[in-house]
Length: 255
Ligand code: GLP
Image (cartoon, rainbow, N blue to C red; front, side):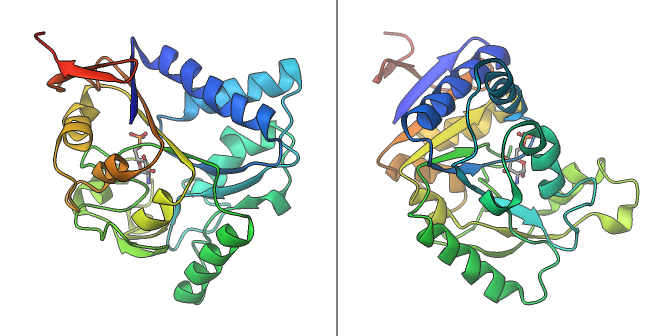
């Protein structure tokens, strides 16, 4: 694992942008995996800037998003489809045919999930998957207890996740209880994963992820098994770590 601890959220976003921009420049027809949440917004703003200021070209990419709420149509304000279009895709040269986001209103969810897995395979697999992390150690919507070999499927959200989300919804009846999510196994097949975490709220989850046992109770801990996991976290998210991580060298903090 390559763990980079940076000063703050702005530096984290700069660093993440460097990695993604380099990937796009080196392989313009890359398949990229995108994540939602507050954490990657700084990265997406920098990608938009790179497009506007230096013509970073998105037109040959294929994209896959990690997850989507079940029961929300793509145009719903809180859907992840809407998030992606307003925070990134509408502001760069991406068209609908390049983009894949699980469909929250799919009639036959199981076959939709199988189709999604097939599409990833047909695209040649994901070159670079961006990941955030939930405070409970989830990645995408693989909540604690998720099989570490899981594939794209429907998941019930943890009650903490439902509560955390409720504040975004005016109509409380619309707060989703289920999501379609890539599985931990699906995510781990990406050639590179780039996990981003910022703030004290993520410190406990990052300790478990990087220094704890690999366990379904912390689905993100599976990054320890990945052949190229690149982790960029800020000082606050790293504050609970017992080890310091520097240029790939890992040593106890007091040495
Ligand atoms: C949701 C998403 C995850 C994301 C997490 C953390 O649960 N499904 O993909 O990583 O939120 O979000 P934030 O970055 O806002 O803390």
